[in-house]
Amino acid sequence: MAKLRFHIRFPEEKIPEPIIYQIGHEYQVITSIRRADVRETTGWLDVEFCGETEEIERSIEGLREKGVSVDPIELNVVEHEQTHPCTMEFSEEQIQRYSRHIILPDVGGKGQKKIQQAKVLVIGAGGLGSPAALYLGAAGVGTLGLIDGDVVDLSNLQRQVLHTTPNVGVPKVESGQQLLAALNPDVHVQTYQEHISESNILDIIPEYDLILDGSDNFGTRFLVNDACFFAKRTLISGSIFRFEGQLATIKPHEGFPCYRCLYPEPPPAGLVPNCQEAGVLGVLAGTIGVLQANEAIKEILGLGESLAQHLLLYDALEMKFRRVGRPKDPRCPLCSAQPTITTLEEHHVSCSL
Ligand SMILES: [Zn+2]
Image 1 (cartoon, rainbow, N blue to C red):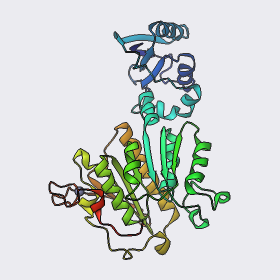
Image 2: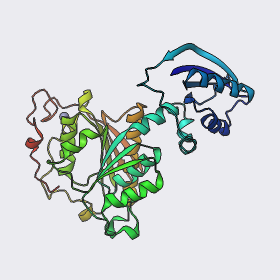
Image 3: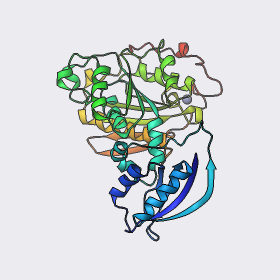
Image 4: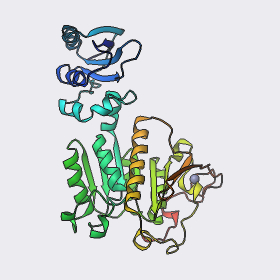
């Protein structure tokens, strides 16, 4: 296998979309569109070719016959071992499905491939997990884990958009899997029809790159934080209450604060009412869940600024977003130099999970 980088100049200033499709369809060896924006001044597109040398040559010839200028920018052929094949090929359908990602300069074919290879666990197929899972599935996240022990209730449908009226009474993970499969058959949905608990969490979390917490109670939120800390997994934490939402990216294994740096202990059980008791604006679940998906995709792609050192606060009534600093607590019971919690069993959260 060989890898070559080329500049391509299209006849037009702007790349017509059909050419993107055409590249994928006719020139399968072009595996990564590194920068799909035509540089304004030059009109060049930076494309990476990947495949057998002869295939690449044939493809270049084919492009030239169509009036496309092709100039090499890296002449060296990079030889890959057979065990490291250029696996960037997308099917024609995938190129169409993900074309709006692929043409984004900071995503491209390589980024889309990263999304495809990602494994994300969504804890709770409810208000936050529903919109998050839908957008992650639509984006083409290769493996989506869904864990939830509940069945769909009619009162869920005001916000839990992963479920539909005919599925009332059906396990949420099953209902979610159905809709995700209909949305994007590329996505492998792994379901866990159980409540997340101390006894199963450390078996499940290590299977995933990224954990998205959409649980609706403090007990689970602290459990997930602690388990992600021990398993060294990045956690995208979201929560909603009436008209307000919160969002943070937790990755203490990279030196950033954990959830306990902000809230050392959960409030006593029963002190803070849950959604069932306090009510919640349905759309708010969508807003925060989609923001969780946004941060998850950024983590997968390594793009932009993460929320690892901030807490995002959202007030739906005032329509205000506020980002507040979230420093590391040197006396944090979990992630400081002298932790008091050293195993998951010690996390002492007695709230109902
Ligand atoms: Zn901490």
